[in-house]
Length: 415
Image 1: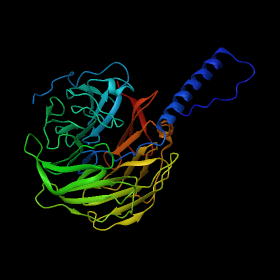
Image 2: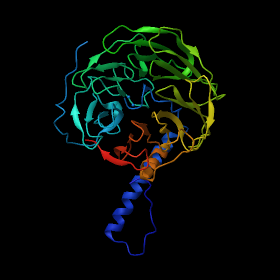
Image 3: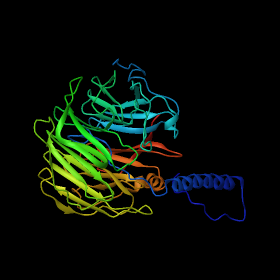
């Protein structure tokens, strides 16, 4: 339905032609309103969930919903986030309130065990939803999910809930700093970035805490506190953690790294770009990192630069710059080097050779058109060949899946 064009109307107007024309006008009007409301969009910061490998990439127990064996019926859901523990098993965090996320009081969850072909209802945390447009979401809210295995998962942002049985039950967790902005999972550790922005969006303090999966104690990671930044995201590769933070006033981003268990002080690593308005960092097993920086944007365009490191961020080499369309916000990378980029007002950009070449998929053309109008399209790799994307919009609450490294995407509306 996206990108509908109003063709020239012949002199003979019939009822079907008139209905088609009126439908097209309504859709175009909605897109124009969304685009105008977007204006000069706020920085689309990096997404805030990370795993040591993509898909393995994102206090009373809450017992709600129905068993996973019961298919769901009803209206389309607005997807807030998705996470896959394998190519077949994944979860969606969603709300039934279409585009009125802020009026919802609860979130719902769906699970797939066949790679997204079918979905079933599973219990969700007893929490309200938070979306990416809320600068100050309610303290109990969650807007992201992250599953490390088929049993171990989290819902967060700003609250934190954990499941240890694949979503059958959920338990509220308490973390120092309270508001969880980003979460990463390593071999045997969970890293949480906590912090809260004040009136200045670029004057936020963030702190990193390390804990073991479960109700264990959290402890502050030495050297991993950040001040005076607009956002901070943690990613993990094996037993090593990284915090990538965007500086104020197009300054040089900050990159810190150290052991995920907090056994040694984290240290700054060199950042290859001199300044950035937004950026993204992706980690793959073995110490491979991809880092992208986007300059100040305008009219839906943004100059971007990209770098690759094979030694955990100690040295970098420049790779091919991603396309200029849209505002860089997130990146994920598989062990073999498949990379998916997403962000504000942009299509998904896909590389199958560690960033040497970038591609778009014609099968996402409609979704990309909606993204250009302000309805964000987010995507992530799960394995070298499997990935997913989701989008909320005026006429679509859809999820897409690829099984050939982004060449072809298949859509599904989850109910």
